[in-house]
Image (cartoon, rainbow, N blue to C red; front, side):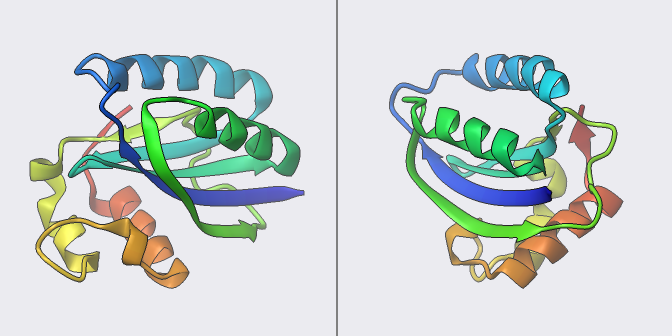
Length: 139
């Protein structure tokens, strides 16, 4: 079964300036091996990630993330069976810095600061669709 899991977490005090590059490199390397695809956003100290793949592999990966001390206050925001992948060419894509995509973040946020914890599943899906179509990515 193909599923999509969207979660948010806040960066912890253990997070350093080089951690995002390390996370992306490890994700791209490891996810490709197990057939997981997805995208990662980091804005206002919050990770927002959408993962796609086999249910067991995505579940295993999410539990690995839960054990990572660079994350705090993790929350599953959406979980669904999907008919096809959205991020077919990315083991893990990363959104360009917030300033580059501010208009998209603002379009889907309840306030001036980005907070995905308050977004509905429908809003999250629209947000990622807009990012794919019009966002600037670092792949």
